[in-house]
Each structure stands twice: as structure tokens, then as C-alpha cells.
Amino acid sequence: MATNEELFARAQRVIPGGVNSPVRAFRAVGGTPYFVARAEGAHVWDVEGRRYVDLVQSYGAIIAGHAHPAIVEAVQRAAVDGTSYGAPTEREVLLAEEICARVPSCQMVRLVSSGTEATMSAIRVARGFTGRDVVVKFAGNYHGHGDLLLAEGGSGMASLGLPGSAGVTRAAVADTVVAPYNTVPELDERVACVIVEPIAANMGLVPPDPGFLAGLRAECDRVGALLIFDEVITGFRVARGGAQELYGVAPDLTTMGKVIGGGLNIGAYGGRADVMGAVAPLGPVYQAGTLSGNPLATAAGLAVLELLDAAAYETLRDRAEAVAGIFRRAFADAGVTAHVPVASTLVGLYLGDRLPSDYDGARATDEAAYARLFHALLDRGVAIAPGAYEVLFPGLAHDDDVLAELEAAVTEAVAAVA
Image 1: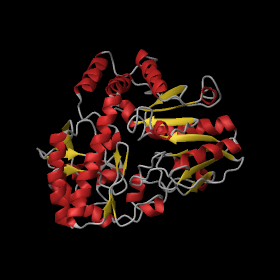
Image 2 (image 1 turned 45 degrees about the vertical axis):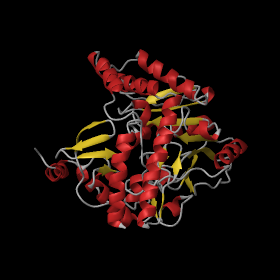
Image 3 (image 1 turned 90 degrees about the vertical axis):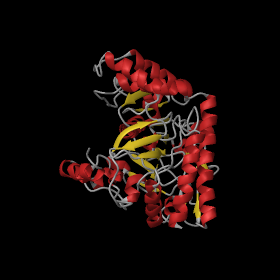
């Protein structure tokens, strides 16, 4: 049986940094990453047989728990009929219909293969529809690794201390304007679109201030720009209709991913019918993908959305509050200054005396203390993200028994690093 260290050493010889997504390399927290052998429900097991309560849940892609029987069965049934056709299928129609039914601002939707592809495509559509070039984004919001959106991104970029990325030309970001989160920027007629995480979940967890999203809607309307909500994380996680349902603000375009694939590769962007009418073959904005609408991913997506009814969201909100309460009690008992914000079903973690409302405030979190806590939790069988700027993703599988297991481990871990 290979150990985590042996696999990491082998991986580094053939994969840059030994990982296929930078944060997984543990550079921000130190040590050797655990290699997952299998997962079930709220737990993952590494190749050495250690079991962890998993609060990463594939960074939000898993909401019903790992290897949920209904999702596994749906994928197995679909796989028997083939894994990719390069032709339309009934399930992609069904998934698009389900997305449009849950998110009223999406009158039409196009399926793609990742959240990054969704945001890149949505911005291309916004530029093509408006005939304008300038894109406004917010510091600390992460919209995938498309060139023009990497300026001051959160998530793994924040953990690695990167303001942008090598290989991105000045020309690629010349029309990208970065504004502080929770401040409505003044726009002009050069702006094609404003893209925002309606709940910022890549710089820890920063909810929108009252009036922020409505202010963006009004300012976009004033100058004829499009408003894009990046709901790759929040879509179908924080509510049936995403964050736009929670806050009552309708964007022109929405990007989605993670939950709608049930753990498989998928993304989507959708919006007003007139805007989406600009997408080929109806309009002049070209976007395509061999694996778009993949039959396995659409099968998994339909299965997971079927599980997410009103009762499921009530359960998810309860679980989020329970997880936050566990951490809050542990910090209070140990005399550690920390904040554990909750936004619907998402849980944040800041080690410091200030609860942030923007990226500058989020960067004040104590990353060294986070690294110590990360390893103390891992040693006691709890996995959180190996970077201080992600969030915790409690799901339907985090039942009372798992919560009790989590509380014991968190209490010990926080006391050990206090």
C-alpha cells in the first residue's frame, strides 16, 4: 500500500507541484497532502486508511454526501449507455429545464464543463451583446482561471499570495477594472458587465452588505451594462434559486457549477432570453465544447437536484448553524479570538479580531494560526480546506453522529493550538 508521502513524491515527478489544482499541494499550510482512496457520506479515507470528517466536500460540489446511492445509481445507469456522444441528449434538456424552473432569471441556459468555462463564456456573451469591452469585478472574488478574471482573485490565489498570474498579458486585463467588494462602483458607458459573487466565498465568507446587490443592479441599469452573478458556489446550495432568491436581486446572466453536476464535471451559464440569443448558433458569440452536456454529469445533476427540496434546505441551514456553533464554542472555551460567520448554508472561519466586509479585511486573517489549526484538526480526523480563504461546506450527510464526532475533534484541536 502506497503512503501519502510516497504518492506525493511520485506525483511531483509527473505533475506540476504534484497536484492538479494548486491549493491541494498544502503550500499554504505546510506538510504532505492526504491522497483520498474513497469517500462515503460525510467522510473521506486516505490511502493509509485514515478517516476524516470532510468539510471540504469537493469545494462545494458535493452537497448530499459522497457516493450518495441515488447519484451513484444514476451515473451507473447512464454509463451503461455510453459516456459521451458529441450529440444532444434528453437529459441535457431536462437539466436545463430544471435550472430554468428554479432560477427565474435564467430563461435560457447553456451547459458547459466547468465553472471557469461558464464565467469566461458569460463575459464573452456580455461583451458581444453590449458591444462594449470593460469588465468590472471585485477584489477577492474568484471567477475561475480565465485570463481577464485573475486580477486580485481570492481562493487559492490568496493562499499563495498571488495578485495575478504569470502568462496573463497586460492586454488581457487592460479592460478589467477591480473594485472593492461591498462598494457600488460608479460605471460609465464603456462597461459591458459587472461580475460578482453575490455571497463572496473565496476570501473566506463575506456576505453582501444591505443594499450592495440592489445597488449593483441599479447602477448597471443606469448605464446599460449587464449584471452577472457568479453562483458557481452559491447556486442550488444556499437556496433553491441560489443567492439571487435569498436577496431578491435578479441578474442578467448567472454562472453555475459544482452542485448541478453531483460531483461530476459541469458548468452552466444562463440568463435573459434576449441576451442568451447572442450565443451561437442563434447569434454571433461563439462558444462550444465536446463534453458540454455530458450524459454522466447531467444524470448526476438531475439526481442531486431531485434531492434538494424545501426540507433539504432547512436541514442544510440547520447543519451550517450547528457546525458554526461547534467552532464558536471551541474558540470561546479556549479564549481564541475568531469569527465564524454563516450565510444560509455556508460557514466561514476568520482567525482575528475583525469580521471582514471586503478583501483587505479578509486578508487580515491569521494564516499561520490557520495552518496550525488545520493540522491539529487533520491529526484528529477532520479535513478542512488547506487554505485560509475557503469556506466550510456542511451537507446533508453531516448528521447528528457526525456532528458529535466533529465537536469532540474541534474542541481538542482548538485547545491544543490556543
